[in-house]
Amino acid sequence: MTITLHGHSFSTCTKRVAIVLQEKQVPFKFIEVDLPKGEHLKPAHLEKQPFGKIPRAIARYIAEKFADQGPALIPTDLKAKGHFEQAASVELANYDVYISNAIFENIVKT
Image 1: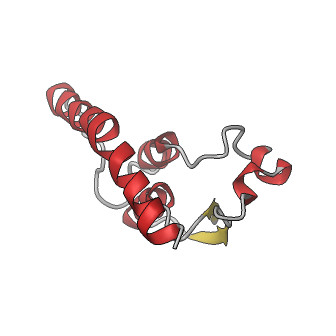
Image 2: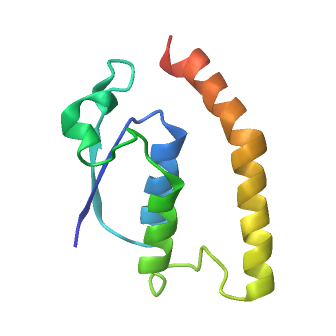
Image 3: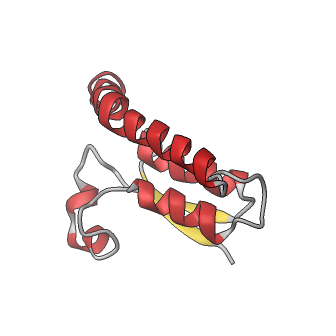
């Protein structure tokens, strides 16, 4: 089964999903979505993702759906999974919002 990943090549969210697909050895094809031109806000894209985003949930879904392929990306041990969730929450709340804005302003927008 080949998965189709829609996203922007500079997007950290897109890269996150692509890395999980590669780690889990899941074949995929990439369809470029031109974020600077607002393609992610057009009806054709919004039908696939109503918020116009590439959410972390996709990466987690792939990691769990293909748990038997490639390395384990999400721990199954309860304590280890708790630490994983803690780190993921810290990254989302305290790092991603700032680095995403910096990448957009300095790389995508220029």
